[in-house]
Amino acid sequence: MIRLGAIIAQHSLKELTTVPARVSDTCEVVLLPYHRLHETPDLYRQNEQLVDGFVLTELAYFYLTDQWGSFTVPTYTFQISEQEFYKKLFQLSMNHRDLDFSRVYIDFLSKYNNFFGIKEVIHADSMPYTVSPFPVTDKIHEEVLNEHIQLWQEGKIDLSLTRMSNIVQDLTTQGIPHIYLFPSPDSIVQQFEQIISELAAIKLAESRIAIGHVTMGSVETAKESLNEWELRQMLLHKSLLEFSTEQKIPFIIQKSNNSFEIISSFKDLKTLTDNLTQCLLLTYLQKTLPFPVHIGWGVGNSMYKARINAQSANSMSYASKTSGTFVVTDSDQIIGPLGEESCLTYRNQVNEFVQRKSEETDLSTLQLQKIMAVLAKTERNELTAEELAYHLGITVRSANRMLNQLEEKGVARILYKKQEKLRGRPKKIYQIQLTSEE
Image (cartoon, rainbow, N blue to C red; front, side, top):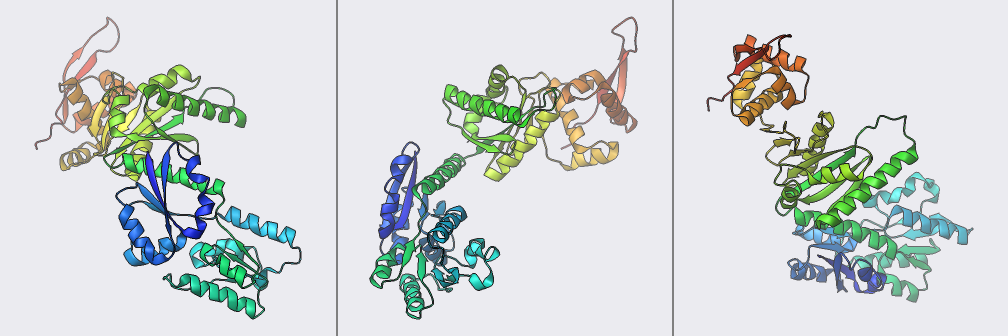
């Protein structure tokens, strides 16, 4: 289970009352309250080995960033969304029709958050007062409080909006009308769920991470309606969840545009593909779904690398004659289509030998690597156009063209012709010399 440390101002603890219980199925929230910002470095250091990540108030985040520059574990901030902010402004304008926003002070709007885009929707003459660019030190609360008080005493504001729970009581004492804004419990839960999902993925990535890119194949029917497309997405998502449950492997499933992304570990990927020989997930989906799917698995030492490899593998699956699964590993090894007799294993890396042969034969480096993979799989250096076409998933005509080019450039020669039927052209048996001298 994920352990998430919440470093939060003591006065804001009440805002989190219901949150830990709402995420308790997937996360243990460790509350770490502070009174002053200078307490936050010790809170962080004392707990960094005990949690998978931290979520901090924005002031604590800036304070620690100024001191350290970076964090040793994944660190996030409590954020109020623009949606919540504008909802509050709308409520204010509805409840106080005569409210002049140019006489409101909002102490959390700054260049850092692009003033929540308010400059784009409010005329310059109606802009509220915003916080001065104070350095984030242990005195930040007093400095911002004094700005509230000064603007109020000078008669420049009628209302203050603040995110600093530490100054709320002082604003009350000073008689300054104010509203304290903190992300709603629903918003915090949503933020926590996203953080938990990312931390779970990062935890998997401590070794190697595997990502599956799953897309729906084309169906030869009339143009689908939007409802039919959405129904297929729902069915695919349901099947992915059921497969995860049956296999007792807790996938992280994320929807991305018109595809689904499965985040797992390389260890689990080997289990799900019988050590990279056949894709159990594809077999399951083919049985449970009334439409075809394409699956590509990518492995990497980072989320980015695994995701790029998965998308590349999915493209290979889509281009393949079969709906087989492809895998691209972190060492750029390509395996696929899994479970098919035509499955090949080759590296998408160009060495000097392959580059030189590509220039000599006018074939692409990828085509040459695939041919070499076929030779390695069959454990012989003899091929017919039909065999090459089968393994590469291309037409016999294209295979013949490739072999003719190899022959013309002196890389292949015709050993003999084999007549398999009484009629028709005999098959040419090519002997190919594509072995690296290294």
